[in-house]
Image 1 (cartoon, one colour):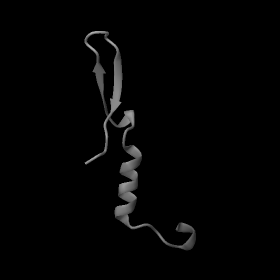
Image 2 (tube, one colour; image 1 turned 180 degrees about the vertical axis):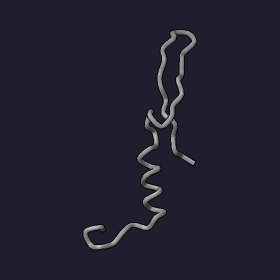
Image 3 (cartoon, rainbow, N blue to C red; image 1 turned 135 degrees about the vertical axis):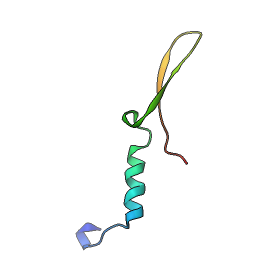
Length: 49
């Protein structure tokens, strides 16, 4: 759209920026540990509302 001299509405740009951060470890996570085998996994926070 920028090539045509148009921009996306602000709310679309914000939603897209939030979407790009969803599910990424650097934006927050929790550590899950199995009590029986002690295996650990990192689970990224989801952006689902």
